[in-house]
Image 1: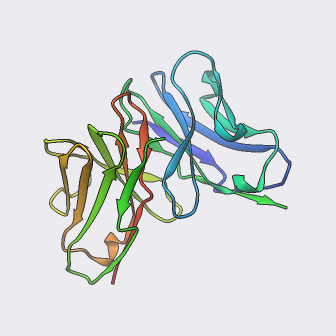
Image 2: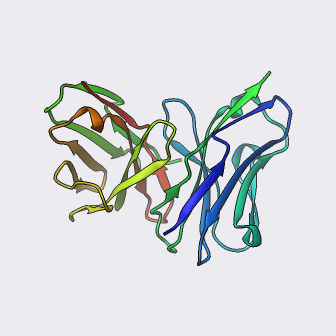
Length: 114
Length: 114
């Protein structure tokens, strides 16, 4: 069975500081990896995804993530946090090409301190 | 981007009653819709996959007689929680898949059963 672990249910950073949200997955086959953001009372919005090809993936709002097979990780980063980045972030994995039956991590709430 | 709308966003009902939640794709035809349940401080749990015109495929452990899913058209799927009880209180989220494979999520519906 596939699984996703997000380390840290709550992360706080200062405005302008580096954002690092950690995600590890378990897999015996190449995964498809996703990061979603959820603002209060809203649905999930896709930030970025890794399917094949370049392991460093750039997404919206200045976020990027790097797929590291040796570490089974797909950590999300942003060089400089903005107040508008405060939200819940979910890492997700899918193992079937063309299938979007996602398995989600428990989420990490990002707070940005002025 | 594509828009997926859920209605109602919040619903409170008495124990024993049934509640219907609608998920609509507003500007595209969704061949597949997914229903998730999100517990507080927990990840999204896939409940079922719904394909237009056919019976939904439920995940293991999800009671199909309790959570009735109908996908009557390419733009509408409904989730009916039958004979709701307090333990059914949760945040229910739908997603719809565009032909090309991208997933779009609804805003979610918070169900509270008294």
